[in-house]
Image 1 (tube, rainbow, N blue to C red):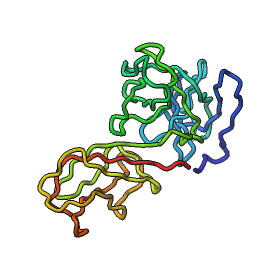
Image 2: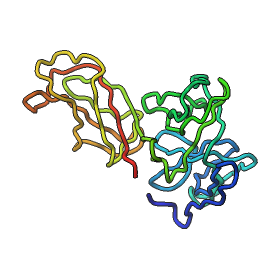
Image 3: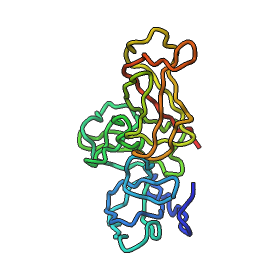
Image 4: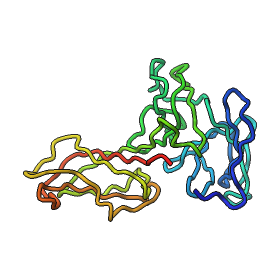
Length: 241
C-alpha cells in the first residue's frame, strides 16, 4: 500500500495488557475517544470505520483531536489495537464461540454477528461477550488485517435475470478479489445450466458505489444461459497479503 507522504505509521508501545498503540495519518475530521478507526489500505490514511476500510483499533480515552484545520493525512491520531470492549446489538450471546468474526454496524455504532451482505465492515474476532450490551473484540492492526485464520470476505445476495446480473451495491472490489457465485435456490427457465461464473473482463475495482462485478450463468455448451433466472449468493474473498 502507499502511505501518506512523510507520515509512516509507527508502533509506540506494546505494554498495556496486549494493546498495541500506533500513530496513524488521519482524515481531517474531529476524532473522539472511543472512535473505531478504519484504515484505507490504498492511501494509508485512517478514517472512521466504514465499508471499504480495514478496522485497525480505537481512539483511546482523552485522545480527542480536531483535525479539521489540516489536510487529510497531514496529522496523526493515536490508535490502539488489541482486545477492546465495544457496545453490541444483543446478537452476540455469552456462549458465542471465541474467535467468531464480529462486524461493525456503522449506522448505530454497535458490534454485531452479521456482515449484512457486506454493509457492515469486519471489526475483529470475539474474545468474550460480558453482557448483552457489551462485547470484547480483538481488533487486528491494519497491517495484519488478513491475519492467520481471519479471511477477508464479503457476501451479497443477487437475482439473475436472463442469465446475468451486475452487482455494484455494498461491495468492495479489488484486482486480487476471488469471486465465487453459488446458487441458493432453484434457477428457473434453464434446461442446460452448467455453472455460474464471474465475467472478469467486466470487473470494476473500487469501494462500494464504485466497484462492480458481473455474474453470468453458462450452459453446457459454454455459452451464456440466457434462460436462467433466480436467487444467487456471491462470495468475494480477498487473499491474504
